[in-house]
Image (tube, rainbow, N blue to C red; front, side, top):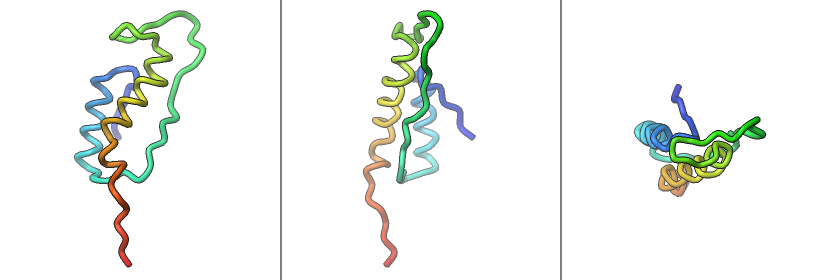
Length: 78
């Protein structure tokens, strides 16, 4: 099992690197994790508001790092 903190760019990079070591091609990526309605302003290590960082910047970085594996065509065995 791999851990991932979408508010931490280093965690996203580590996760992506580990995934790409095991999987040459990725068929589907669902960016559906997130946080909402924090009771007070919390910022990530870069100074961005935590909800924005997690729900938007984190998903963008993850998708960008996995993009080449996502673009690979399906292998047809027929």
